[in-house]
Length: 149
Image 1 (cartoon, helix red, strand yellow):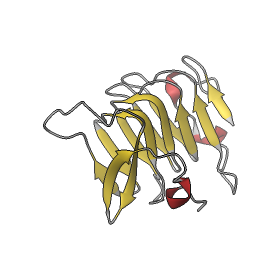
Image 2 (cartoon, one colour):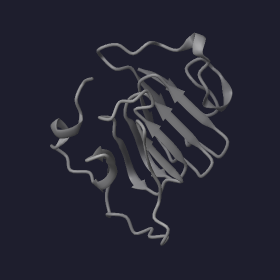
Image 3 (cartoon, one colour):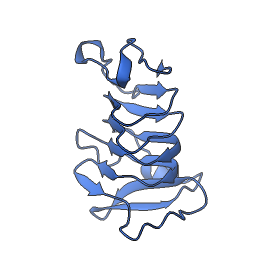
């Protein structure tokens, strides 16, 4: 597992971008990139695998992963899970309020009514019946959606 602290990635690059020459290629074990900071406006995290952010993703911040994306905080920016077409990828966050949420080729966004109430717990976005659905995260149901591709 790779990780990044405030202002740097595993490659020591500021602003959270990983140059293509330093990327680890995900294999059967699906590499995971751990970001140990909040992703602020203007910062972009891109990784060919799963991404876990130990903080929030602010409006204007962006996380792109070929696998799953987990936000250990509030998602208010842009996230793209399954960036290379993996429709089984999911987005998990303590609170989902994305500017835009993409899974593979499907796009969703926050409701126009400004509903910020959420479900009162961790939330998950996934593709179901050709649409992005957001539901309360239910521990123990991982086998339904978390499969190796």
